Length: 162
Image (tube, rainbow, N blue to C red; front, side):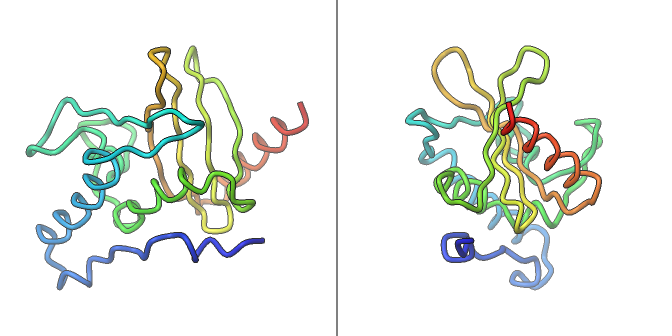
């Protein structure tokens, strides 16, 4: 196994901002902005875009989706684990060839998706292929729940066998 901590950015912790949510949100947003708005990572030689609209508080839709959890979009709440790891998303995309990153394709409805799972540190990035010739960052989140890990591992192993 490689040491993914060599290439993963440090966590961005609320305590680094004295517990002040506004300062923390701003720092997390600056990382998101740097990694996905001011520049774009590439995956398989194609740009990775993010959903911009609808904006909320002058910040892109994808930002809010990446730092919040919940099944109903309008009722999602901030998740500190997602916030802390916002910088991991681009790093995982850029280190997709690292042996610690499990990569496989799946289909959800008509959507072709590629999953990038850093199982060792329980973090998943999901990209969706767009016919216009680019990848879209769908979501990213911690996978530290046992049922989530079992489901992902089963899907990965099944995909690798076929």
